[in-house]
Amino acid sequence: MASKQPEGYKKNSSKINAKWGEGDYWNWLQFYCYWKVLGGEGKRAIVFLHGFGASSSHWRFNADYFANQGFRVYAVDLIGFGQSEQPGPRKIKKLDNCFWASQLAAFLEEIVYKNGPRDAILIGNSLGGLVALTTQALYPNLVGAVVAAPLPDPALVQLQLNLPNWLKVLKDKLVRIFFNLIPLELLIPIILKTRLIKIALQSAYYSSIKYDSELLKIIIKPAQRRSAAKALRAMCIGMATRKKACTAPFLIKKIETNPIKTPILIAWGRKDNFVPLSIGKKLANQYPWIKLFIFENSGHCPHDESPSEFNQYVLNWLKSNLGQSIQNK
Image 1 (cartoon, rainbow, N blue to C red):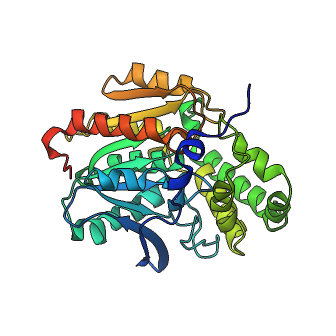
Image 2 (image 1 turned 120 degrees about the horizontal axis):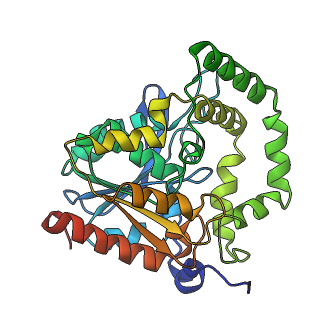
Image 3 (image 1 turned 180 degrees about the horizontal axis):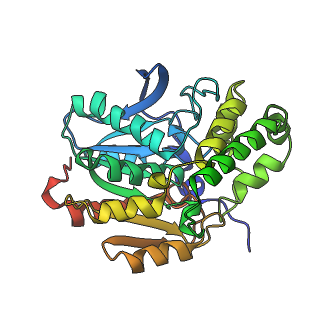
């Protein structure tokens, strides 16, 4: 494969805006949460949700575009990421997508819907896509549309076993012991100081990110915080010990039976090394009401790697599915 710069860097290098919008902190259940906003008040809201290890800054090629299209653009750092609080197991036993969906629902109610219509569009990358879907399933009255790019969940590929309660309790205890024994406080600094972090980050992209120093800063800075290891431990325990009701297969079934029909788009990079495209195709075939779009020359982060194509396609999809309710400039 010939090495090439990512589209966003090569074509929009003068428009890199990782510090886009106005930032602020919000207190929720004694956790401090960081969020950003861009665009005029009273406009229909778009809320961006970052993926694992990222933050609101990862929407550097998307926020300005949608704000210029007449939306009020928000992004929130999920608890454990970015500039939001990074709690350890002592403060919170576990972090999972149902917990983050609760955070997002409160963010919508307390921040977003104070100044605009109650029909926000949720656009999430990877883990953010799962959080968006979870919020749609658990709080359908708060969501106007969902874009998951892509939709990751190990439960979508693993055989779901109905374990006896005692065995599940034992499994969860072993998971907690395992992650408490792993010396994340030592491993994370080692990874950040070696080429391992660049190798891991490159695997999320199809195009070369060699010259994208801003992207590396977006990922590394939150991981350098002293509380990062504790938060990562809480996430690992939380996602590994989730209730069945928090898994994507269960959530999709719940959405299917909900009388509120919210448009859902799942977007995949054909070159995604983390979440196979076959999962997206299977979901689209199994649930015809879920729209699948494939970005040919993108990996796991199509919004950042192919921003022009991503922005235009998502906008057209929103116009097609939401019609006159889309507020343009």
